[in-house]
Image (cartoon, rainbow, N blue to C red; front, side, top):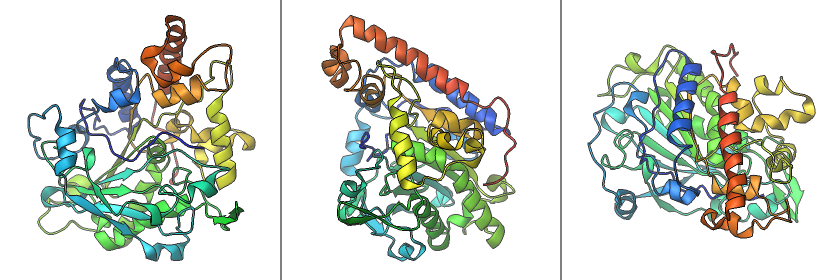
Length: 419
């Protein structure tokens, strides 16, 4: 069950607007409304076109007391940045397998970490890699980089919101920046005790343990317990993961803070001004991760088939407040961001193109739907769609995306218990 590639964080080209507020629900509503007005109406018709002009950075208004960003950015700065970016080595966390936190093939998880400095030394950007999901084809996936740390690249240039260059990444360039490799196939949510035999291989579904163990490793080995500001982000399946794990991350950090009485690093500003009483300020951003629970042109909800299979195969652990609202056989619906968002406690930001080429090809104009209509060329290149198909596509995008997003937003702060 492959998905769109999500191997590199997008550099910010249109400034996003994450707004500080005492009420997380208000932050969510403002952020999402801004996305609808600023991003969903962009003329780009494919994901590649959107990413070629993607946001340059999150606004400093998202977090207090950041340095003033540089004024301008060249048109091709993202390309030049990657060419000039220092290479960040892969860190394989071999000690985490004692917690059962292993990739699909049983190898330990891995990250790329670039330490912060100066005023950013207590702040963190955690970027979750994307790359679709797996159910019946997880054994095949376990042979590649999306299922095994043995296959991952040993070095990586950091770009976009992971860049060290203040001209490219003015808000986060000196934060601790982590590229969190995706090797479980279920958006860091799978949770089975025993491995599964598949195609003569043992396959492990341990994404939830991976996420928890890596965060705890960063707390114990890299002082993340003293964090003041934390942004959890990701693209595609990593975008889904950023929302699904948003409150969990805050809970782990709060628990660490209460246990250790963490304090800021030497030379940092007074932590009390930024951290809050119960730990760091945690916010989350999903980039191209708003997968729709919508019908295709043949009336079939294709993403339901995918997510149902993933949730069942990997024993996915979903938000308990969401699953409590649906029947047991429908728990998988809480994998969809639109059904999850009303139950999130932390502020979130949704970035998604209106004409999402992956969702057009896999959700709306699936190759098995409406064979009487020739969607082949249209699916591969939206510019080649004939007028009558473009009209259908326009109705789909202007109906499902805004309606699903806006209807999922909480109108008041949800009264949630801690997970």
